[in-house]
Length: 166
Figure 1 (cartoon, rainbow, N blue to C red):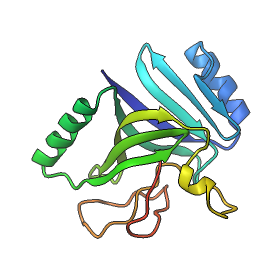
Figure 2: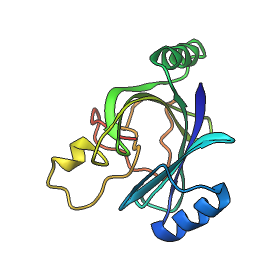
Figure 3: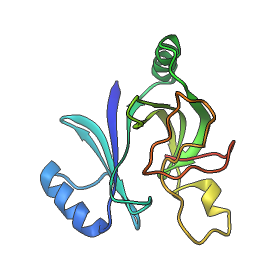
Figure 4: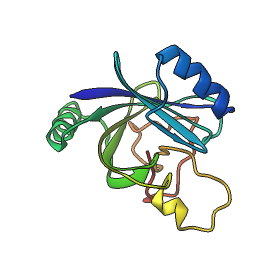
């Protein structure tokens, strides 16, 4: 099964948890101090919010799959369509370990395509082992020199070759 994924950066997590819990008529499947996620079945959506990022609003879109074979099929389709891919392989973000890659649409909107492997106790393992004070943006794509991989303005990129998250 494929599941549509939306991640929204919010300023007030508690207020937004109350709003979306009422709208979806269910509580989040996961809640952390800076993050909440609903795994909706009607419609099937992985909807997440966090206080990480630069500006409130839609952070990125994505497709979550249940099986590694489904991710491989999506990646093969993107490759056949000659989309510029940013393949992160196995990475951690949003309290999860996932295999993922990114594509960017013609407007510059980042699309994450991923298969979640496991839940982890921290937002990102890389960030949890550093001395950083400022939280890193969720799902930031590393910068690329590929013209077709348009950088999208809401999420800062780590240095070339750095791992990202979500």
